[in-house]
Image 1 (spheres, rainbow, N blue to C red):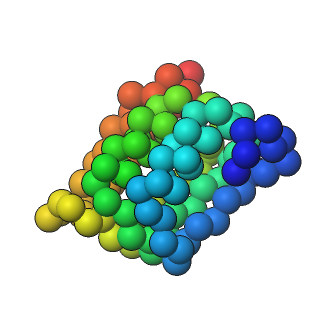
Image 2: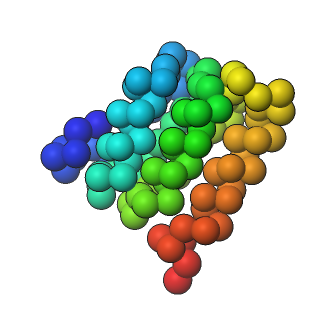
Length: 100
């Protein structure tokens, strides 16, 4: 997902390994991209630092309308799925993008 790419509207990374470095780049791209509508991270393994990076990026993204984080395995925290869902929910609720 390049910040200059104006045609990418859906990104499916399900079943892929997303390490810290890749997640950092994805997070940055999400803050810059204004055409991506759908992002699928389902069935990936990410750590708690990456979750926080993504949450911060999602707060700034203005175009995303669909995010799939089902069955994400989070390493580094004991309550993985619950924490991921609550952090993404918090990002959704505090984002100006979703307040109309």
